Amino acid sequence: MTKDGPISFAVMLGSLRKASFNGIVARSLQGLAPDGVTIRMLGSVGALPIYDADIQADGFPAEVTAMADAVRAADGVILVSPEYNYSIPGGLKNAIDWLSRLPNQPFAGKPVALQTASMSPLGGVRCQYHLRQALVFLDARILNKPEVIIGAVHTKVDAAADTLTDETTRGFIKAQLEAFSAYARRHHG
Ligand SMILES: Cc1cc2nc3c(=O)[nH]c(=O)nc-3n(C[C@H](O)[C@H](O)[C@H](O)COP(=O)(O)O)c2cc1C
Image: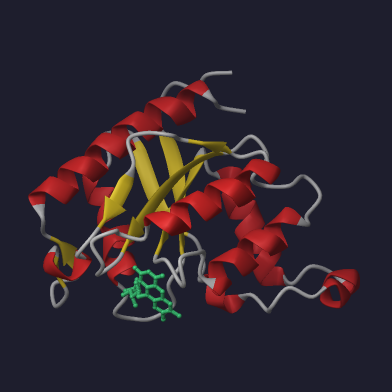
């Protein structure tokens, strides 16, 4: 099914720290989005308890069901994250693990785009490949290209102004959001 008209994306942020570079990138997305696209931040992945099947047996925590509802309501999800030890930060993986256990699993058929940022020149790209691997099992529809991999991110932001300043990076992100909007409209459930 395709969808015309306005669409909305939800952003899941993989970093918890207040001064997160990935947070700056995430908060810049609305300003780089095409017309007709609304981008909202999901609640912090840090609000979820560590996954425990015993907690699940007592009932999914409200933070989990709220995040799942927001993912289901969105036309696509953008994961914005650092790379930890060549992989997915634990808090983000934990959120994915919680959502994966729900009935009417929220990532099934959901368009997903990936963005990573790091102070290293590699921009956290290894996290993206581990996210792709996990999201295959969840049956998400992951945008292949354009990729957004932001190396040396500390040189590309004005932290005090909470702004992504690097024009080349802003251009990459605009191109991805443009492609992702078309992709999400084409792959609308
Ligand atoms: C536990 C841990 C592991 C890390 N591993 C990597 C890594 O594998 N690759 C990398 O580029 N940066 C790594 N870093 C550095 C992060 O990219 C850096 O702290 C970055 O600023 C975190 O993103 P944020 O600014 O959005 O919080 C690691 C940092 C932490 C705390």
